[in-house]
Length: 291
Image (cartoon, rainbow, N blue to C red; front, side):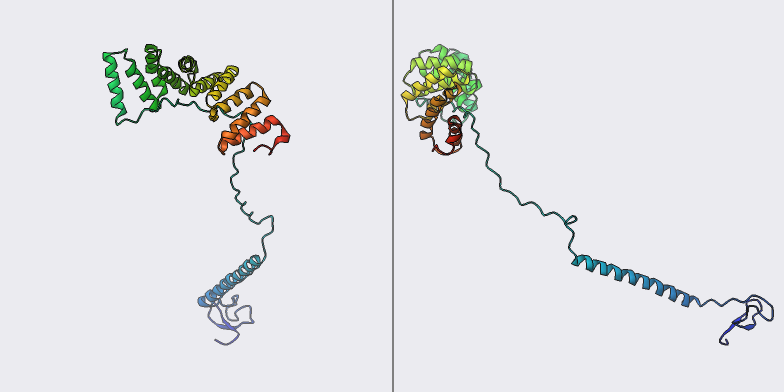
């Protein structure tokens, strides 16, 4: 085809591209469309160019943000440093009462091969002889060793009733009732035991502790003093006496009793509680001055 010529779509004549109408048939002339491959290649190139431009812009933005640190308002906060667990503070309240003690004359019952069989044997023996104080006492002692003080009170009380002159029966009855926090039953049993054996320091101590647990601090202080006189090396009666005096509001006497107890107490949390209470009773100027 001649350069600058077009073909008339109506009659097929070659006409100069400058003409608006075909000179043969007077039809309007249009510029021929480019081949399909040319159109596709042009479109593809345009799309590729656009994608490349977007990729370049994105790369520039990423590189710029990598070099630019985050503002403080958008920065991720640093994790707080872990702090060591603080020790529980020692309070300056009245220390807890010491525990009940088993008298030295009553060693714990040795562990048996079959406690269930032993208790069943006691039951059979009592079926034939319900007033057998020895069997009742033995059953109660086994139950005490098994940490069943509530179950031990019944047979021990029956044994003590059957043999009221035996200190071990009376003391064991009081001890079981005290461990079960049945202080109204422990009190007469310990008083009976103290009457039977007034020289036993632990009997006086457990009687004093029972009175203290019942809120009778004045008679408890008297019994603690008796227990201290019987055994001056024991720390529990001294601590119990200090607590009783503290509860009675006798601060100066309580401080003296606490100091005596501290001289016998080993270092540890219990001694720290007593020391904190002493500082509270002495006032703010005493902090750090009591070893």
